[in-house]
Image (cartoon, rainbow, N blue to C red; front, side, top):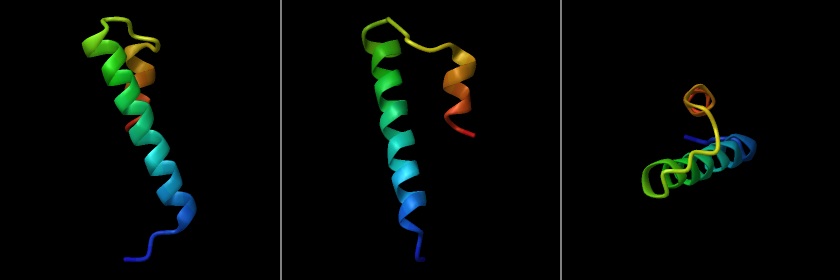
Length: 43
């Protein structure tokens, strides 16, 4: 399947943001965004 480059870049940015927020929340116990903001990263 040929996915447009812009879609791939957006997906990678979202994955990176989710990893960052997972680390802040689960490892450091210092969330930087609300739960609802985090949930919106998946939509």
